[in-house]
Length: 247
Ligand code: SF4
Image (cartoon, rainbow, N blue to C red; front, side, top):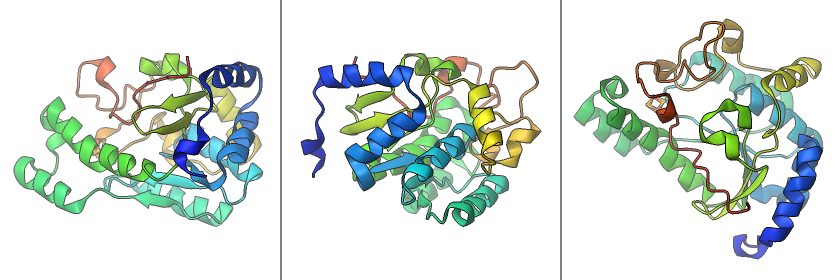
């Protein structure tokens, strides 16, 4: 079946979403697996939500696909987790890399740590290292699965569990949309899911090493991302643009 043949009528999607709101993430993943099979992929930054979600997905389909954006600037602890994950689940993490010529040109013009020198530079770096590789990778799938939660703030408060992603021409599935951080933590602990050791050192949100720091107790969970930028509303890298056509 091709991408265009998977269209779900908007009314049906709305009904499906209201059923999913009262079910669990596993119901959503089971539906995604039955509907899209190997044409769906989890896009993971290997944060706590992502590892919990993959564990659920793998229990439904041992061949479940998982993709990550290797920006070439990730913390060592994240690469350690990649190795642990591949051993535990016998899965090949589909790492997506930036275009090296674009990286080279950017560094030549602006320097290796350009992101500290203005929001435009930071967005350019995120564009080359994350957004462009994601767009390229998503062109080949019918559905992508994310670990987004509504209570993470920003635009995420309005996400649906299943959305038509007009930008990428496929479905975006957020099985944890109505979960809390505590529910995620409980799942990880109860199922002994491997997770990034940085979480135990005050990093609730994980990203590239030079752009992520630990947060103090009580601080916003995304306060450690691009902390030198003042505007909290700008703390997205362009990967998640909310375009829920299903509402
Ligand atoms: S998070 Fe930082 S290093 Fe990573 S892509 Fe964005 S600006 Fe570049």
